[in-house]
Structures are given as C-alpha cells and as structure tokens.
Length: 462
Image 1 (tube, rainbow, N blue to C red):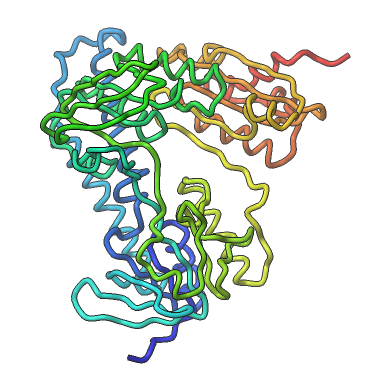
Image 2: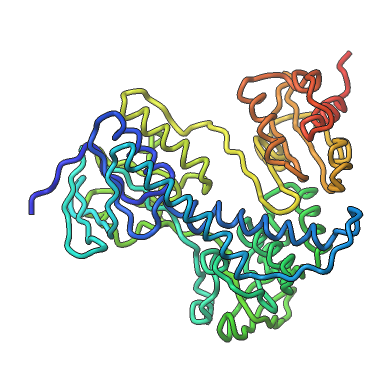
C-alpha cells in the first residue's frame, strides 16, 4: 500500500491538533486529523465543557434550594438526572456539529479510525467503517491527550469505578458517592452531585484538598465542602476495594495507623491522569517517552524524531485546554519558521467549584520555595460590593507584589473568580504595576471593582 502524502498529519483531534489542521488547511495545505471516537477531542465531548454544563445545573439546583433567601417561595425542586444529562448531550451535539463545520470550511480532512505510527512520519489507520489507509506527513503531530488513571489498588479496577466520562452520563442521583481524590475533577463532581442530593464522601491521601495550594486556600475549600455536607476523609491510604460501583462498594483504608472502612453505592476515581501514548507505535518512529509515559519534547514541542511534534496532555503540558491551545500557537509558529517556546509562559487555572478558585502566577508557597520576596495584600470577597447584591460573599482575593510594584501572583476564591483573574493576568502580561489596577475606573457594581479595594490595601511607600 502506497502512503498518501500530506503536509500535516495529526493523530488525535484534541485542541492543539485540530487547530493546527484547520489553520494549515486554510492556507491551502493538505492536512488530515485521525480520531478514533471523539470529534474535537475530550474537551467538548467528555471533559471541560460537559462537566461545566452539569456543574451549572447543580448551581441552579442550589439556587432553587435557597429560593426563600431571595424572597421567592418555591416548592422543593425535584432533580431529574435524565434531564440534566439530556441538556448536556444537546450541548455536545451542537459542539460536534460546530467542529464538523470547521473541518468542512477549512478543508482539513477528518479520518475516523485508530491510527498508529509504523515508520517515521507514517501512520496506518484502521478505519472505523472498515479497511485501512496509510498516511505520510511532511510533519506529524501527536495529539492523543490523556485519560483517567485507575490506580493499581487491589479491587479498584474490578469495582468498575466511574471516571469523569461515566459520571457525566449518570441518569440517577447516586445514593452515596465516594470520590477518590481531592483534586480538580474530584471536587467539581463531588460538589455538583452533592447539590443534586447525593451523600458524598471524598477520600484524599494528603492532609488537605488541592494540597499544593496555600494553606488559606486549602482551609477555605475544605470548609466550603464541609458546609455543603460533604464528608472529608483526609490523610488516608486506600488498601483495597470491594464490590461494584453502582451497586455497593466498600473501601478499606488506613488513617492515622488505624484501619477504617467506608461504604457507599458509587465510586468515582479522580486520582489523576495518564497519557494516551501506549499502542500508537511511537517506538517505531523514534519518538521517546519519559518514565511516566509522556512524549519527550523540547521547548518548541519537537519530539526526538525529526518532523514529529507532540502537543497537549500527551506531551506533558499542564493539563488544561487553554494550554493545549497555546501549544497549537507554538507549533504553528515553529512550522512557519518563527521560533517560539513554552518556556516561561503563564499558566492560569480555575477550579469550577461554586464559588470558583482561580490563580495566576506565584502562590505564597511557591514564592517561599523560590526565595522570592513579596508584599502580600488580601481582602475578603465582601470588599467587592457586587457580592453583596448576589448574596455570594464567601471567599477572598490576595496578591503578591514584587519590589518593583509588579504583580507576582494573584489568587481569588469567590464568585466569578476566573473572570476577575483574567483582568489581573492582563496587567501582569503588560508588566504593569499594581497601581494601574488600583487607580483604574471599573464599573460599579461589578466584580472587577473589587480589585480597587484589593490593591488599595497596599500601604503607600514613603
């Protein structure tokens, strides 16, 4: 079989890969994307956007439960998980249609099937409809993403736990959901399902939820979940699992030197991610992986094989869709002869609990580890008067200010924290001093106005 020549062949249709294909095809180049299941990758189908869709339904359920607080007398709302799921599915259908239109309008070819490298820059595709194709690219991009990791705990795999994929397809509220892991995915689903009416227990091996954050953050997040009725079992090592998720499960664990048993109806594995780099022939193309299974790349996202690039989760980039999009821009520019690297780029993040947690730049913990001096300023979210109109005053904002008055880092726990963070991030990108935000005129009453209160709290130098 002779290989079909392409300017670009992308394995996996995630964020970075699809944008590369659309961009090059729009320039008149022949580009193809190979995808085995999810058109557009995991974000629009089974991850970011669907989860935020469900989380918003849970927010509405929470507001309904608080109706009297807002002067509205409503009967207690009944949760219909089938309807929640249907709303999510309709959104996904629209996103898939949007992606198909992008392929059609750009001229990039979408090939549904399972692909694997069989030689340098050559991919064989077992087509979903039968048969096969052989593609050779002038450049090849590995964009295969990652999947939920199921640890080797005895009995865990046999218990058939939910991952984020199955959790998004629930058609009933679990009686008692046990969440393994206190990271992003675990926390977002734990709060949402608690608000739908499930009893929820989070088991975390470390001493705090999202334990890498500053203590004031982890304390506040922990208290948020306790206030919502979520049970937290921290500093706990799981030894074995019994039962089947969806029926009955028993978790045998060690906490403080004592064995404990936690029983529930459903189990959600949210203990991390693993790259989708197995079984795709990387070794046949001279593409090396690191001990954790991520593709080895240099700062330009080139692999160890000439003409082969890797982007997104599988390349060990921070596991965010917005970072994968920046990976696209980096490879796009490098293909055009414009040197661009991943080194030193900003990595903003937002945990979509309610309220949100958002951070950009250094935390206090990171500044201390790097021996970077700073001035700290912190205010309650109540300082943003908009929160009082919404009855959403929980949380705080804080910033780290450098000796040159530039902002080193910003953290917000509160309503619309992600949107507020973007304003600070823009100032940081521009190298502006904190006074630019302190002295800005923001509309009253908006959440952005809280930044004036925050940065006005920094003492004036004499």
